[in-house]
Structures are given as structure tokens and as C-alpha cells.
Image (tube, rainbow, N blue to C red):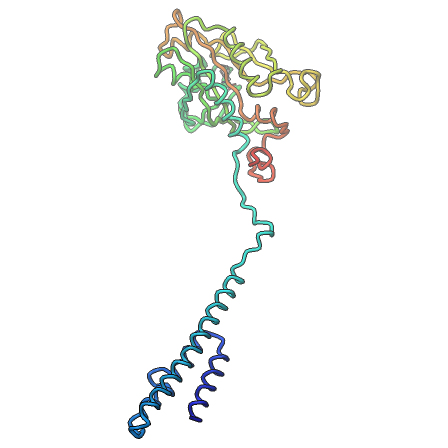
Length: 340
Ligand code: PHE
């Protein structure tokens, strides 16, 4: 009996002192496992006098059950504690500020390009992109600029060989469209262009969007109406346009188009050099020679064309004073335009 009491006490103390499920399993094995001390008592049965055997066996079994219950209780406690510890460790303080995830935004040039495309698509235009490396024929000759014509100086550019060059404007898009499409034509041709220019308002690489309309009876009045609608969509409702006579070999008549200054609305400020007007694009009625060379009968059809610089529109719209900031990939500069 004394040994029984001793074992019970010992098992209880040892179980209570364990701090992990692993340790508890060891203690359990020590007492009631296959080679445990209490299990060993059962093996003594054969040495017990017959008449005491039944009561001895009952006592051992009772002890075993009692000790098992102690272990089970302890196991429940340890499991519960383990869960609580885990919850504590995994707890998230939802009152702390989160780690902001940086999200990229559209580049200001893409924002402006998409706005321009949206405005013209709303007026029934389609988009057609031509190659950036093109031939002398598409860049110049088919646009009524023969070899050695002084107008080539305006856009002298990067030649790959005598015949192939980085296009100096998107106007080859006019020719490629007219060669492939029958009127009525209403297209926009956006893309990169290259010129030997480099200062605060000119970059050797920049972006243009060419527009071309060819149909029966198209005139300079249609150009005025079209561009009036366009500038109101891009700048604001009060923006007005003004045509100034100009010269391009591929349009006749040719115009340069100004808009009322979006900063001072025509009063005069630094942006418009106190004139109240800002030049935004070149345009005109497509020269008959150009239509003819592209296989369109100028006696039946007429066309109008315009070419605008995306950088220029972005600089006017956002008040950017140096074109180079648009190409420097400075995130602090770029973040200002597309806030999400
Ligand atoms: N291609 C001309 C330029 O780059 C712009 C232009 C396009 C003018 C279409 C008239 C018609 O300066």
C-alpha cells in the first residue's frame, strides 16, 4: 500500500511539473507505458498469494486509472496553453499603421496620349501605328519632300544608311494608311519620332500623334471644327483655337494652330510669353501631290492632316518647364501625375 501511495504521489508531482506535451509523454511512459513502474506491478501478480490476487489486481488497475486521469487532465491543460501561446504569438495589432504597398502609375506621356486617343476615338478615329525605322520614301518623298529639298533641314535626323532612317515625324503614317485603305479614312498614328535636337523644350526622341482624314468634300473648315472640339476635350471648355499660316510640303494650305493659354486664359503670362496664345500643332489640307502618290484621286477626294507633339501638350497641361524631366524616370516627379 505504501508503494502504491508513493507511486501515485510521484506520478502526480512529475506530471504537474512537466511544461510540454513531449515531457508529459515521457512521464506517462515511465509510469503506465509498456515498461512503466505501475505496469510492472501487474507482473508481480504471479507472486501474490491466490486469495489476495483479485484485490491486488483491482488496486493496481484503480491506481492506473487514477494516474491516467491525472495525465489526461495535464495533457488538456498543456494543449490549451500551447494554443494560447500560439494565438499570442500570431496576434496582429490591427491598430498599427499598415505597410503601404507602392503601386506604379501611368507615365504622364501615356496619360496625355491616352486622353488624346480617347478624344479622337470619340470622334470616330481609328489608331494605326507605323514603323519607327522607315525609308526615305515614306519619311520624305511620298510627303512631297524630294531629295535635297530645303524642307528636309527642318527635321534632319538619324540615318541608318542613305535610304533608311529613324522617322523624324509620324507623317509616314499618312502615306502607309492611304496606300492600304480606301476613303473614307479617319486615323490617328501615335509613336516615337527622332530629331537632331536637344534643349529644354526639344528632345532627340519624342512622341507625336498624326491625324488624317480623307473623304469627299473635306476642307479647312472641318479641320477647324475638329481641332476646336479636340482642344476643349484636352484642355477645357473655354479653350479657343487660332490658325496661323505656315508651310509644310505635304499640306496646302498649311497652318500652325495655337490655343488660348490654359494658365492665364488669354490674359498673358510667363507660359505664353505674354501673348495669350500657345502653339500646339501643325496641320493643313493634304497636298494633292501626296494624295496622288498614294493612289487617291485628288479630283474626287480631299484630306486634312495634323501632327502634334505629346510632350508639348503634356508640358502645357501640367506646367512642366523642362522636357528632359519626362525622360529621367525620377519617381518623385512621375508620382505627381497618376495618383491612385
Ligand atoms: N509632320 C509635321 C511635323 O512634324 C507636323 C504636321 C503633320 C504638319 C501633319 C501638317 C500635317 O512638324
